Image (cartoon, rainbow, N blue to C red):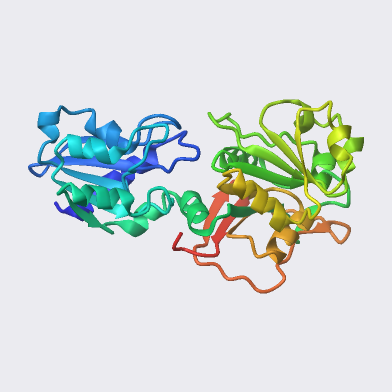
Length: 352
């Protein structure tokens, strides 16, 4: 057994973390005399980090002289939890093996430096690629300063998204319906345009409901929602709802609904994404129709495309799905069969 073996177990722990919301999923393993003494992972948002979860299962005597394996660099600052570095030092850990350096500016390199200053041996980069795959949205956000964007589309075999303009069309099966509801919970924002809001009247909430609901983001540049104030996502209060618009009167017109209206003179998707980034939104699941998809594609903001393909054909009157402005190649295609439908998930980069 070696560092790679114990880090693999730490990564398995990281994948068990749920409800971490804006915190990364991290796993930790305490090893002493070649034996695993404790494991831990990030607790739901606001709770203990992985290192604390593992170390507090043991007494100080049991941790003294041990090696700690952790999938992400320990923090060295006060947030909702005290710094993990101090606990590691106080518990007499002799050696720390880290998979991935934390891309968050508050942490990057600082945790590792603090441990080394205290005489603890620190090894980095063990299992880094596997560890990075646990938190693609978190890593991307803090490396690039903007949310990870996934386009989701349900398309017929002849590349249509509905039977005709303004028509709500059921394309995919019940297995896809359930999968999309679970998929939404992996993102911090769900994006649609005003046409989808008006035609489909969706709620956009994940099922089952997660501890932290993603914000519902509606792009309504012209203020069309003023004439559709009965829509469920404007009134149900199930999740935060943000309407982005260039219409100066829309905020007053929707004052009686349960939404936050954000006015942007330039209501382009680039400005919308910039605004969401400032709010700390790390990931976006863009469910809107082909117009919204095309806008994100043209802006160069897409990192992943998830397509749900149905064997039906909708014909020439159907609304075509979006087509990227230039050829796209993908590094990590994944294909899954869901009944008589197919899910194809493709990322534009693998090293996230």
